[in-house]
Structures are given as C-alpha cells and as structure tokens.
Amino acid sequence: MSGLASAPSGYARRTIPNIVAVARREFLWRLRTRTFKFTTVLLVIAGIGLALLPTIFTLIDREGTGERVELVVGDSAPSVDVVTAFNLILNTQDISPIPITSKGDAAPQFTVVASTDLAASRAHVLDGSAVAALALGRSAAGDLTFELYSKDGAIARRTQLIRQAAISIAIQDRLTRAGIPPIDQARLFDPPAFEVLSAEPGARPGPESSLQAASAFLISFGLSIALFMAIILYGQWIAFSVAEEKNSRVMEVVLAAATPFQLLSGKVLGVGALGLAQFLIVLVPTGLAVIFQGQIAALILGGDASSISLPEGLSLPLLGVFLVMFVLGFGLYATLYAGAAALVSRQEDINQIVAPLTLVSVGGYMVATYAGTGLIPIDSPFVIVMSYIPLFSPYLMMTRFGVGAAGPLEVLVAIALLALTVPVALWIAARLYRSGVLMYGQAPTPRLLLRALLAR
Image 1: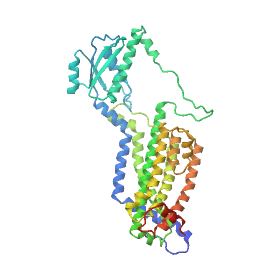
Image 2: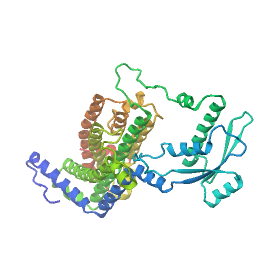
Image 3: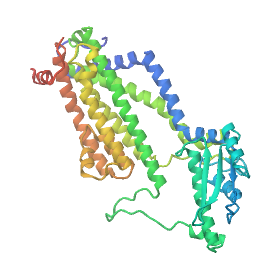
Image 4: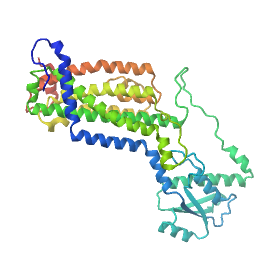
C-alpha cells in the first residue's frame, strides 16, 4: 500500500493523505479488472435498450402491420358497417408507445376483410394467412355477439384490441337501433371534466392525469431499482475486498500504516467513486437515448421528430434527490458491509455475515415499491416514519418525492438524518474492522459482533 504514512505522530496531518491513498488503490485496482469493464459495457447496452423500448415496440408493431382479420357477419344484420368500423377503430387506437405524427407514414396495423365462410376463415387462421376470425351473431335480446377464433390467448394484446373494438361497435349498434343519430352518439361518449384534488387545503397539486401519475411512478421506480442495485453490487465489492485482504494477512500489514477509520473511509470512497463513475458512464448514453427518443424514433420509423424535453415525470429536482440519496445511501451501507466483512476470515462466509444488511435493504426497496404502486398507502404513518429512518429513506423518501407525496422540506430532513448517520456507521464499522483483523476461524454470530463492538 504505497503512499501510506507510518509514523505514529502527526495523525491529523496524515489522515487525508492516507484515505486518498487507499481510495486511489481501490479505484484503480477495480477499474482495471475485466469484471468492471464487462459489467459497464453490459449496463450501457441494457440502459440504452430499456430507454428505447417504446421505439423498439413500435418498430416490431410496424413490421407486423397489415395483420389480416376475417369478419364473418352471417345473419346478424348489424346496423353499422362493421368492416369499415373495425378497420377504423383498430387502426386509430393509441397502441404505439411513440406516436408517429407525419401524415401517411403509418401503415394500417390491421386489415379487416369480410368473409362468408367461417370454416374457411378458421382454416386461414390455422395456416397463418389470417391472425383471427371473428364471427358476429345476435343474442336473444337482440344485442350483437362476437366469437373470436385465434391462436392468441384471452389476455393477449391483439385479443384485447379486438375486444375493445367489438365493445365500441356493439354500443354503436344499440344506439343506432334505439334511434340515436351517429352525430349524437359521439357526444354521448365525450368524457366529463374530472379533476382529482387533495382533501387537504393548500396541499401540493399531484399529477393531473393517470398517465402523468403512471409516468411519475415508473421514473421513481426505475431510480429506486438503480439505487438498490448499486447498494447491493458495490457493497458486495467492498465486503469481498475486506475479506480477501484479511484472508491474505494484508490487512495486518496495512493497519500498521493507517488506522481502521482511514482504511474504511478510503475503501468506501474508492469503490463509491468507481461506482459513481460507472453510473455516469451508463447514465449519459441512457439519458441521451431517453431525451432524443423522438428523434431516434423519427430516424428509424420515419415521421417528424418531437421536441427535445425531459420525459414525463422526470425533473431536475428528482435527479438531484437521487444523486444525494445515492451518495449517502451507498456510504451508509458500504461502511456497514465493510465492518461486517472484517469479522469473517473466509470469502465463503461473506453472504452469511451481510445477509441481515441485504434483508434490510430489500425490505426498504419492497416497501417503497408497494407504496409507489398503491398496494400500501403511501401516506400511511408506517410508510412516512420509515421514510425518515436512514436505512430505508434512500428508497422510500425518493419514491414519495417522485410521486408527489413528500415536499422539499421532508426530503431535506431525511437527507440530514441520513448524513448524520453515515459518520456513526463509519465509527461502528471501524471498531468492527479493528477487532475483526485478529479474529480467525470464528463463526460470525451476534455474540461475536457484540464482542467486536465492545473491544478496547
């Protein structure tokens, strides 16, 4: 460990140089490993792929345009032109995640044609020349009935689109038979003005639509996943590094040149800086793919490029909160991972000793996910209290802020508590580190943990 001061005097002057030396070694050593290079490339590809999923789905849809649906009317005698109606409804539904705005550049998703032979239409479905056959009939009450013959299941996307179109046509048929002109039918289904407001006077306005609410959840959910993966992945890096040094007796030599506090601080800073660098390497191309998604879609699919803007639900304050929570949350868990790993002498025991920390992290992540989806009320006292507990706040407070359930003051309080907890965790981990260097061949138990904390 080059660059570490070894003389016992001048501790305060050597603290920062020693921490920097340890951090530099951890950063450069892991930066050169094949594992880091491979995971970085893999994460960049995965990030860009996820960012461009809407364009990819749209491209797949367009490659399958003109899917043939054969419509067997029979003796149902509908009051509307069902072939024209099905073609119009199926091909104008908002089924593509990215709209193509240029005129004439989107081929029909479905081609609905009339048929007089149900058996022949079903045979066409079997041989692949048609994707579905739809037979119309009349119930005893006079309503239209539909029987769909397809290789798709009941919950398949194509089945659901045809079902929605059938519902619309059945309603039109009922209204027409009731004597309501088509121009009046359109007005009957105009959506009313409907606004969701908070019961609390002066409360912050929430998302204005269900689409905005879903987008806000997906953004905060994605950031929570990124934070969770970072804590688990980089925390494991630190834990295995500590166990490896202890197993090779390198730790005993290093502790003669630097204190446990300096070693732990350097390890956390080094691995944390490398993790943050990897995140930036992944975030930059992924973010560019998200922001320029309209231009990329126009280039691949044709049409007009949409204006450049941040995705719905993503904002600069949310990104700022994520960055702060990433740094502090990782710092808290990383120090505890390092202290726990010092208690074992074999790398095979790492998973056992860090399992409680992993379970706590998973618990916070799962509660944040359930609260974000509404399975747990996000304004319940249980969730609110957990969002201030430092081990859970990186997940819960970010989720609450992302969906509009927490204000800036609440976020600042949670960040302050988290920032105050990191030095305490570092002190605890340093004591475990100092005591654990001399513990070999002992099973990691709660009693061993208590002995290490109380050792003088």
